[in-house]
Length: 296
Ligand code: C2E
Ligand code: MG
Ligand code: MG
Ligand code: MG
Image (cartoon, rainbow, N blue to C red):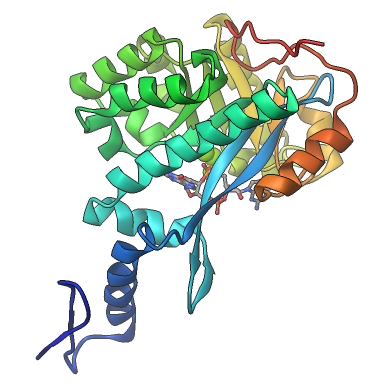
């Protein structure tokens, strides 16, 4: 039997359906309304220069404030949004929101930071995606090099001409491109030379053991060496301890992100963090062609 549940969404009940599947259906229904009900929000995790200690940017991370279930993490709703196609309008909202925040930090606080946004493969396949990026930059006054799009290693390694061509067009706009969660497919390092990539984000699994397992530090060191030769910057994600930071910095990993510095923060807390942490203005790092600076 199907029970009408507002709008045109139906809820199907069936005895055999296990709880988990049922739960997913309920969540999917809720997801459709979440965007128009303004239930999504972004948290910002600082990116730190491991050489100067400065905040050079932030990664925008999506959160869903569910009216009943509370805060739902992205690992639970992003896959659902990808399966249902909702990732297209949601991804658009996320990109505009993140650029809007970075633009306001620049105009109001005189902070020239780089903003990183996670992108799903469906967004790259969407014909209007390049226009969306251009619009987001125009509307917010951000330089293209102040925007960084993070795509997962699996997307980047897909042998898909359409995707690679889109990535090249994005790069031609001057926007930075990062490979997220990098390192799980080490053999694919050679493919990097054909990709218009500016940043590699080393997966947290390598960072976790880097201070105690010499194999992990060797892998990171090798990644950094290849990246440097290709003109690619390296970011370590998931730094949780001082020991990890102290191993990463000397082997050439220039930028770090992780709970050691800060968890992802709501807008106001992020601004507090930057204000407390960053003293006199420095030119930002992170994208080699980044020409931004903080005017005095
Ligand atoms: P990611 O892009 O690799 O983001 C890093 C994740 O690691 C974040 O989880 C962050 O909170 C977490 N993290 C950061 N530092 C540490 C640390 O020191 N220790 C530990 N244990 N974790 C740390 P979060 O926010 O739950 O996001 C999970 C994933 O969801 C992201 O992984 C990304 O793949 C996806 N995601 C988040 N927001 C978006 C979005 O707006 N669009 C898309 N397509 N995916 C998103
Ligand atoms: Mg990411
Ligand atoms: Mg990551
Ligand atoms: Mg990760």
